[in-house]
Image (cartoon, rainbow, N blue to C red; front, side, top):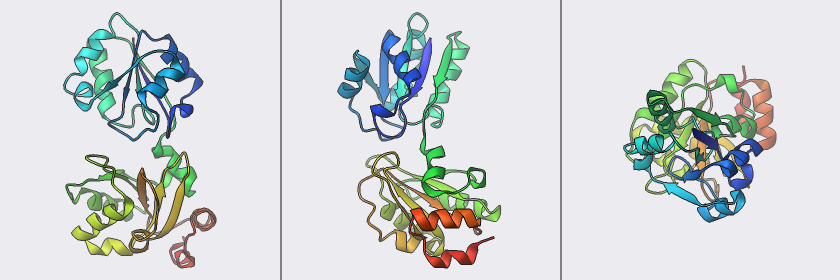
Length: 250
């Protein structure tokens, strides 16, 4: 059996009891660090579960994923994945290939930035549109997503590139502004280290760029053109939102 176990937002302490039990019972345990930052080393994870942990690289999850699936035909294989296992499309490939080859698989879910962002910002989950990633290649794609979401009065979660190094909010804003400077006037929320020593700050992107968020991981939520009063109150109390934000209340 192939079991995909979510590790949660920060370190091995975030794993669920169900996930921990699955890892302890597994014949073999892998962990991947490619799709998200995670702050427990393989040795720390191994100490927690009581067995050796092997690190998977990107190619192991993509080009060579058949090897893992074949291994799961006769063994219980656990792959530990930061966040929630199926948020990254990379892991969908594993389940598809397992199904094609008659290998049973299951998911043990955990917390993810995709849901935690609502608690951190107070923004209502059903008001989020499509998510985008700001990459080092300076693609216009995230700006197109922001524009499309704003047309339907939706918030936009922007994930920031991790490779070759984790991108900071200031760098992401510079990339977006280099393509279209009008984005600097949009209200947004910058988030850092959600799940640990969180920093959450709301203002225009031009001011967020200059705020000191500290260490990564970072992400950004570009706000919808209109805010619900409860969203505004939450951002005021927990993200130091400016009073000017009242101007976009519904």
